[in-house]
Image (tube, rainbow, N blue to C red; front, side):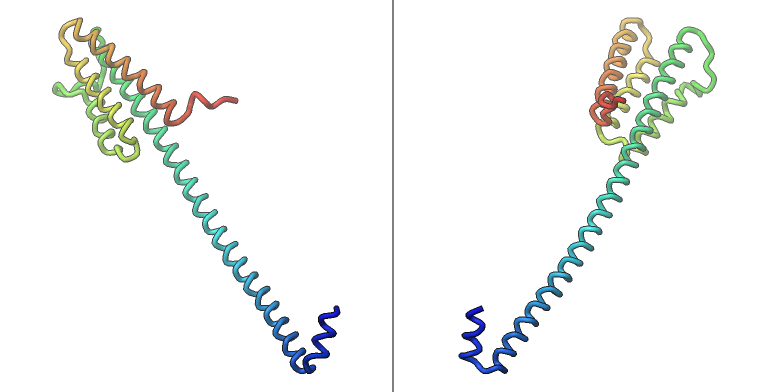
Length: 175
C-alpha cells in the first residue's frame, strides 16, 4: 500500500491513471490470449482424440477381418485335407477333382494370393507352405513319403496355432 502512495506523491494523476489503464489492458490481453490458446489447444486435443479413435476402430476392424480370413482359410485347408483322405480311401468326394486339378485347393491358392495384404506375410507364407504340402500329399505315391508329408502338415498346423495365439492373443482371453 505504501508504494501506491509514493507513486501518487512522485507522479501526476494522469500518469498514474495511464499506468493503471495500461496494467488493466495488459491483464485483459493476457486473459484473452490465455483463453484463445486454451480453446485452440482443446480443439487440437479433440481432433487428435477423434483421429486416434477412428484409427483404433479401423485397426480393430482390420484385426477382426484378418482373424476371420485366417480362420476361414485354415478351415478350408483342413476340409481339402479331409476330402483328400476320403478320396484316398475310396470315397467319392464331389467337386474335389476336375481334370487332375484339386479345385478347392486352387481356390485357396487364389484367395491367399489376392488377400495377401490382409493376411500379413507370416500367415501368407504359412498358408502357402501348408497348401504346397497338401498338394504334395495329394500326389504322394508311396507310404513313407505320405507319412513324412503328414508330419510336415501337422508341424505346420502347430506353427499356425502358435502364430494365431501370438498375433491375436486368443489363449490370453478369459472370462
